[in-house]
Length: 387
Length: 187
Ligand SMILES: [Zn+2]
Image 1 (cartoon, rainbow over the protein chains, first blue to last red):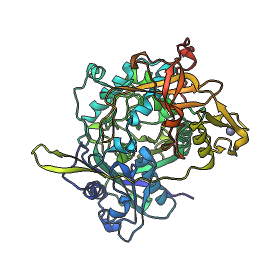
Image 2: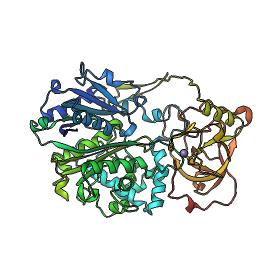
Image 3: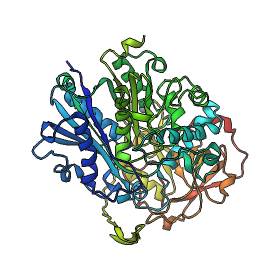
Image 4: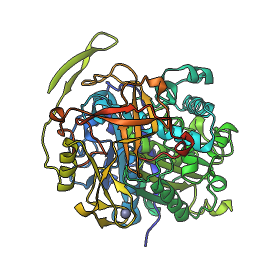
């Protein structure tokens, strides 16, 4: 029997190209302290810590979950690390949630981070060899396939890039601040990996995100409204196998259906108020709208084109500015999860979607093979209120 | 380890220094990958065809993860070293320590003749990047026998033949119809 879990504290750092004002432990502590402050809890109130980040070679710091125990107040407490490539921030939040839901711990601090400026992710991804093509080079052919399959015109990618940067301009924590970016500037920016232009690609960021997840009792004592976890799901598949469809990976389809079922959602497009999807390259917005059956085949890009996914549209996607605006890799998934919780708590500030009560977060990683999703609500029956 | 450049900050103070660490190690190849590597040295591409679903794995894994059945030497099949470009991208190289590419280069998926086996992230040779297209017919360019190396083949290789094949060269045959492949990415 699982018990309810609630998010009562959320913290994040300012994300930027280089946070050389703090060390690695200082960076994670900044986010964690803000999450504790939000929950009005102290370090001694925490029972366990769950940490996530991208693979160690990105910064060259091995097993940071050990060296950071001190900075995270975890000495003498259980601390664990989650590894699921780019989706790790999402999976890390889910592991923390499950520790509460299963009754193992009452108050869990979950933290995810990346300090890209202290390492070289391109070197790490290439294993130090020449000819590295980065994540964008792996994903680019699949975007071309999506465009052909869905009959999507190329300006859709440019529109997503502009939308997310304008949303980020409302988010003081976001790395890229480009309130005036235009479609033409995206279109005319250098082509990095055909069809991905410079402005359709995520930045390289330093940053961290943290949340405090607790029980119903903990939520009752929270000084601010909690966000309730209404459903969780994780799925993965092999990164390559004959016949694999990387545009619409089966693991992503199954993960979405599992989380909808867990949350009692029959029609995500109608019953979800705001979605935070992992979109490091513009085309992944329509690809995930279809890959998670929010939109039908060929309908994802039409939702973008009609403005449905804008912050004032009927299905806002990435009001935070998304991965396209801040990419501290390990934290990028958790930022999606944290933003949905902020939204249903009504604490998202200038990028708040009015009256958002149900939020859907997703993170993916590897060769689009690891998926993590949750649905959060302002109340335990928030989805039922939407029938 | 490789000492590299220091990067002065806006105020000209040095706050970070690059310092690359490298650990070189050799892991024994599992028997099915060992045989794949040995066959590459002979100029042959081999795969395992799952006895249950018929899909061909290149390199062979010794099992079909979809059917969860073992595959053995009995399931070995020699694959064509000719195929069709079924997907590609043009990569603008990011400069990092060890990157030797300076100009945009192509990485293509080549689906081999006679089946479903696809080799991903393949280099194309003797064709300008702006002439690459889906449907293009290509053939493997094998290195001369004595110059082949399988040092970069690992148990986790994604169908790599680097070290034995320089890339894939257009054959000049008429293109296969692109509509057959567009929108049907595989990986
Ligand atoms: Zn099989």
